Length: 354
Image (tube, one colour):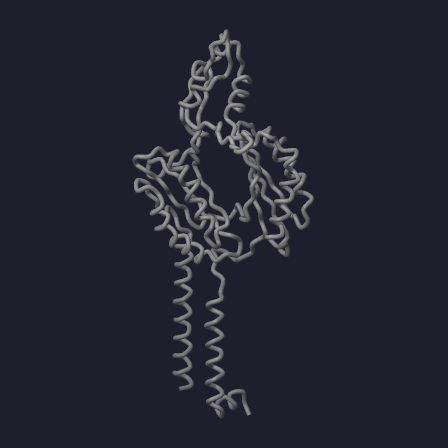
């Protein structure tokens, strides 16, 4: 008796066994993970903090260091790196492979809350975190541009509409805007005019803070009625800043526009993005660790027609680069190889065993 005899004597059982092997192979094929590289994703969280006007030294001492002290107490942390630049701080936290990413994110948020008491109060927003590996290449890069609208308006729509909607897509871990052109008002003071009015730069800074604040105003209470005061002290345009009163001299108000130049501009004039020689807003989309890169990219592409319908018609939104193209080509090669292998095996069995 040899190994082949039971299969030859029981052709029905042999056929059922072969059918089971084929079905298991097909199921295993559909459950294969798809990625550009072997999926060895360390739980990684990136924390960013912004402090406008601060130098890299100030960011390192007042923002990065207090956060690092709190993050160093988190269990399972294996690597922590930070980079402090002008008005920006970035901290990358890498955890052990057995550490749950969601639990680590909760610990990071708790550490941020604990450090809030020692961070500068003038920070416009608290530090934020994202569950993504900053070394991971974006799966999609989008471009938003307009031939008629100013680039700062396009950036504002990309930041408030596109980035928010793309972040909601399942599998997307982080959406970043490159070449940011956030709208801002630039106040350029004339030192001669300040000295003539008996004012300093600190007086101007204090006046700007005190007169551009959205805070509760209280209410009027009466015997029968009560009214809430809903006045908003925030100002957004250069024209509104020019009429701002910063001091009184001899009963005459001194307005901000009398002391220098106030213009509508962007936060960072040394940062911008171009595509084909045209000013553009570049949007990078990164996936969450462990997410299927092909399915995530397809979901983003399905969302693009709806996003174009939300945007003004004079804004063009296109895909600039697609990392999944090479992955799709590799999958096609693997599929062709599998089919060719099956055909060759069946042919060899037919020719030699008949």
